[in-house]
Image 1: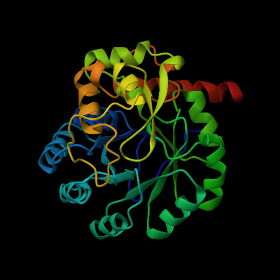
Image 2: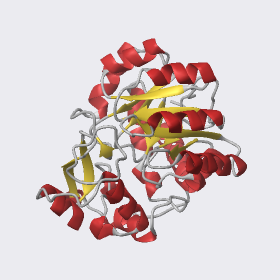
Image 3: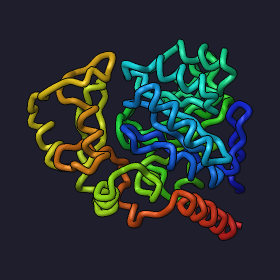
Image 4: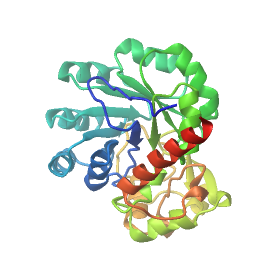
Amino acid sequence: MKLPALKIGNLNPKYPIVQGGMAVRISTAPLAAAVANAGGIGIIAATGMSTEELREEIRWARAHSQGIIGINIMFAAREFKQLVFAALDEGIDLIIQGAGFSRDIFTWCQEADTPFVSIVSTGKLAKLAEKLGASAVVVEGKEAGGHLGTTQSLREILPEVRDSVSIPIIAAGGIMTAQDMAEVFELGANGVQMGIRFAASVESNAAANLKEFYVKAKKEDIVIIESPVGLPGRALKNNFTEKILKGYPPKKCAACLKQCKKNFCIMDALINAQQGNLDEGLIFSGEYIDQINEILPAGEIIRKLVENFENIQREVE
C-alpha cells in the first residue's frame, strides 16, 4: 500500500498528514508553517484568539510557508462566527470545526469557496456533513486528546463512516506511529490527523516545561474530566485536575463559551498550561501519550512517519 492521496476540495498536500489544532495557542503559526513546509496540512487553533490575533497568525504562516494552512475552531466558542469570517477574509485554505455542529458554517465556507471539514464521531453525523457540503470529515475516536465526542475506538468507528460517505476521511485519535497510519488506511481512511505528537515538537507554542511534561507522561497519568464545554476531556493528572475532580468553585469566568457549565474556567486553565504554569493548567492529552519520548522538529516527525510507513510496506511486500 502506498500513502493515499488526500484531496480536500482543491487541496492536495504532499502527504496525507494533518496537524491537529490545539488550543489555546499551542498550534500557532510557526507550527502550522513547519508542517505545511514538510508536506502536511498545518493548522492554527483559532479558539481563544481575538480576530486580529488570528489574522496576524494566518499572515505569519503564509509568509513563512509554501504549503496548506488551515484553522481549527470549536463551535462552542463565543467568538465562533467572528473568527470564522476573519479566517475566510484572510483567504485561509480550509476550516476544521468541532465541539458541536454548526449548519451555518457550511454555507459560509461554500460562499467563500473554502473547503470545510467537520469533526464527527458517527456515521450519521458524517453523512449529514457530506449532505450539507463538507469537503471531508475528521473521524475522531475515544483515543483523542482534549474534548471527546464518543466512547468508541477510532478503529470501530472508521468502517461505519467509510460505508456512510464518499468524501475523504481523516482518522484522528491515537495516531502516533507509521503502523497506526497503515492500520487506519486499511480501514478506509484517506489521511490522518495528529495532535499531541505535534504539541511535543520544536515549533509547538507550548512552554518548554509543558513539552517535557508530555515526554515524561505515562498512561497512569491520564484522567478524564468534565469540561465546561459540556463534554468529557482527557487530560494529564496534576494539581489542577485534582482540584477539578474535587469540584472546587471557579474564581472567575472569561466568558469564552456560548454555554458554560462553570465548573472551572477552561480559558484560564488552558492558557496556564500553554505558558508553563502546570500546577494551575489543564494539560489535554491523547490516550497514547506514553509513546512520545523525544521533542523533534515538525518536519522530522513527518519525515520519520513517511520513511517508517514506506519501510512497513516494503516488509509486507
